[in-house]
Amino acid sequence: MMAWIPVALLAVPLLGALLLLLAPQLLRPVLRTYGLILSGLTLALSLLLVATFDYDRPADVQFELDQSWIPGLGLRFHLGVDGISLPLITLTALLTFLCFVYLCWGNARASGQLLTTKPATKAVPTTGAGPAAKTEPATGTRPRALIFTLLVLEVGMIGTFLALDLLLFFVFFEIVLIPMYFLIGIWGGDGRRAASIKFILYTLLGSVVMLLGLLLIWAQTGTLDIVALSASHGAGMSRSIQILAFVAIGIGLAVKTPMWPLHTWLPDAHTEAPTVGSVLLAGVLLKMGTYGFARIAIPVLPEGATAMAPWLGALAVVGIVYGALACLAQRDLKRMIAYSSVGHMGFVLLGFATLTPVGVNGALFANVAHGLITGLLFFLAGAIKERHHTADMPTLGGGLLATLPRLGALLTFAAIASLGLPGLAGFWGEMLALYGAFQPAAGLPRGLFLTYMVIGGLGAVLTAAYFLVMLSRLTHGRPQPPTPTSPSGTNVVAPPPDTSDEQPAATPAHTTTTTLERPPTDSAIEDIDRHELLAWTPLVVLTLLFGLWPGLLLSLTTPPVQALLGAIS
Image (cartoon, rainbow, N blue to C red):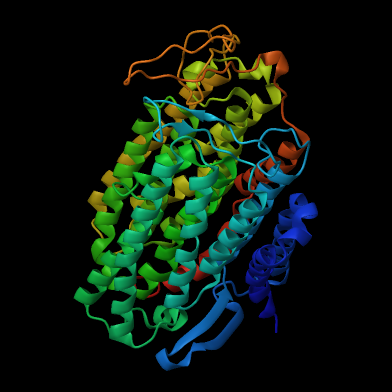
């Protein structure tokens, strides 16, 4: 009866994107609010989904639409929602809407206004001269393209969480790659081209391997229906086939998660992406990989999951410790937050590896908590970079709580939430994942998982360490005059005197020349603007709500988790 809601969730942003192509001149006067209206309507539909969901049976598929798609191949357009996908659909719609709030509202001169038409920055030669010269990103010169990209990205993200057919899941899973590639490559920083190419190559190669695993399941079972495959718990597939399919699908999902050692595309992508790109990448795209483990890999291939769980746990705890140590070595704030995602996703994968209701519930809870908290962290990191023109922490200096008290206070809140302070959302997922490792599923080596629990606990301590080091660098201490920086954030001496009337002297072929800019003084920097406060407040409220009342999420995910672990338990 309510099957139209999932269709509308996909149709609204898709039709909005198509209208931008068909009637660009008609929509030009309302571009600043166009994306806001469409994403707001999508958010309203997701809230309608939340309001009408039957919470007495969260393990059942609701709002189901099952129509023939390609009859010759037996493919179906199968959509639906259960207690696992509902929080992620709502999180996706919320973060997309908040990104448009951040872009569209407030003063046109405010920081982060990529939809404001601005002149392109002149080329800045870095090695000799000629076509190799770098240019600063001309953000804001393509507002229609930016809105189109974000709307198509939203279609792919929501569709991934709605899909109940393996091939349909794969199609939506791949749709997000192209808009994210352009989001990084067009509106990113100096290294945007290399970062976007690295992102697309890693994710496409992982997807090819995942597709082979999905086709192997189809060949063995004769169906692509996720609901039927989950209910059969691997029937029709031998143990060796399940292991092979789990490894293939797991590699594709691990690249998107990302899991160590397949994570190396992530720091560059986050560092170079614009603020809204980093928020959606961390808040939603990474969750698509971990969601695939809960929706496909574990319930459809239970014997493969049991065989590979110790290996998955080992890679997870290595990622936890590696991510924390990498964060301690970072100077760039956005890059540090990117590496923190590797560690946090390690806790999610550790929860899945335990194959217990406690551990998997912890993984699903950590998914949502990470989306809220890390989305807020990237919003704040972007705001700091836009105000100071650098994210280099030694260059920024300390005293943020004195110079920009509201921004410094929000950064402190987000950091302590991410390090797992009890009472905030970041605590429960990590705690439940570690507790699940204390008592893994029957058939798994308990001594090995106890070792994983100890290593994961050490990673939690290191997580607190790098966030506290970051806060000591940025928010505490006496304010220092900002050091002049180049556009790339490199410390330099004071800018040279104006010699615009003089003829520039010739430079050797290998001499590096850089255009210098002086960051604004503290008195010229504004604290949090209205549009920023509107975009960030919901994330703060939800972080507090789920931290103080975790049962809101756990009561929703527990029944479907018990169902998907049926064959294993």
